[in-house]
Image (cartoon, rainbow, N blue to C red):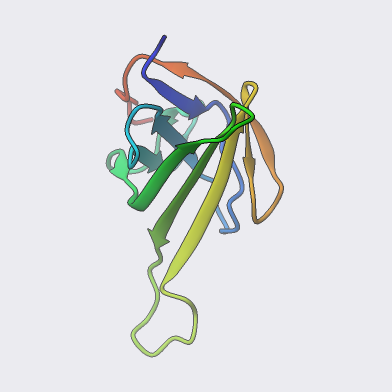
Length: 118
């Protein structure tokens, strides 16, 4: 079994730009994210792969994997906009569903998180 599950296409989590997300099934806090590159989630447009803040990875009784993490947002110091977004995802049967938007994308196994810039 490959240690990581990842989105194949970027998933809409409620931001203006969709994200790519990977989880490590055996790590209760193992969540990483990046912005997609030209080849969707097999490449990245961000400077690296980011470990998610306040992340949880939990298997459910049905075999799905629930994932939650906090994503810091860039906002001005006097902005009334939220400074973070709480993201919830469910990895299940080769797909990932965002709880807030109900967006659903395919997922697949990965042996590593060496995602090239593109």
